[in-house]
Length: 580
Ligand code: FES
Image 1 (tube, rainbow, N blue to C red):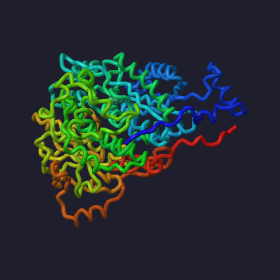
Image 2 (image 1 turned 30 degrees about the vertical axis):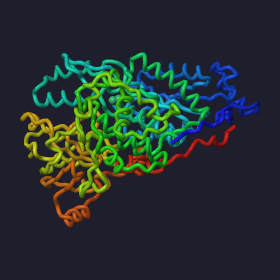
Image 3 (image 1 turned 45 degrees about the horizontal axis):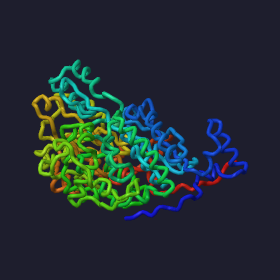
Image 4 (image 1 turned 60 degrees about the vertical axis):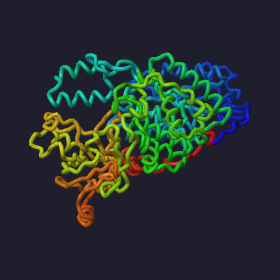
């Protein structure tokens, strides 16, 4: 892998709008000048779009307008012309039915914003879970030079002396209330301690995982992922990234130069080492689809299988992103992978350099946070991909977040037809369930929910929790929050709403989970399974109009990234025809 910079100066695409003295150029420049931009800014220098996912309703990205000012400073310093562009911001904690339903809509809208407007490169200003993949997907499809700047994680939370992780403790405290170990008033008191500063979830949840994926893919400057949102070094990173994108445009260093198969394999192994979110599986598959890289679930299993989870962060471990940053952050992890022969060292990053050259001197400052391999949280990190008659196209589980005694388990299915059925019955002490059962939740996949909500880590029945049991095997076609934990099988494909075998599991069926053997099996005969599938009919109506229709008609399975089928691939950024 090598990259040869393009010649500079040369004519950039923005000059198709602003170059020359003709009527159209005067029209385009004239409008921009009403904002006070002097004439010489349109002289052919790189125009950089700062694609900002700031929104008051995306609180994790609520500080990105301030950060954008530092990006702008860097772009000015390097001789570029920054333009800040608000883009679709799919917030994890506000969008209904689920932010995931809008990841693809955001990617579609942002791709067209990039292509249809006079920018030569982009800074992807992201943070919350879906904002990072949606902008990476858009950048991959336009192939304009792009660099990721994440908003950074929140500072540690504390409640009565205990370290409190975003999401992770929400689930823990909620279960404790159900088990009678915590009062509702204490739960309310804990709320204020969970979100202590600006920034994204402070656990190794999906936001931190995707920030790490961006860095491991080479799409962000080295060290970006872990810097806390409020640390002055986050603002420095933003400014440095602003400087860097100008040179990337001059060099014509594009996503397709960076997002190689090797880069994706680096990211998959990194996800294993950090104990990253299962959501990274879907997002990386979708991003790869946009650049035409043949990435599959089997790659996830193959590359992740022998990676030890060495980052001791919640939900798998003990600490939070703030401590990960102080310990040295992702460069230390990448160096470890490189030393173990698990990193493609020649992969190019946004710096134009090889990834190994950026991390080979990294130093671990805290071996409780970034563990030695012999003290790893698990030697079998990564994402295990399960197959069998219950998941012909695959299902995933995160072994580092699961209970060791449940990784091989055979139990009686207790089935919920959808999330409403689950909510209606899970609290009923008359429910015929004990800790040996397998909870099965249907119709929560990309089409079924719709949007594939993060409900796969369904809470345990209160009557089981009261016995002191904290984990059971759970299986669904849903996703799970990256902050969650448990022996939770997710993304079962094909999903129930499209007639996957999950759709015909019945109460009392025996289910076998064998994570070391990578097997997920329902213990009924082939003939019985075929007969049940023959009798099956779709449980949901097809939406009649709007984005819900588009999504339902075109969303693909979780096993291939749940992108819309017509958005796969790189369409580039031709400047097209002027309308004036
Ligand atoms: Fe936005 Fe976690 S909910 S980063």
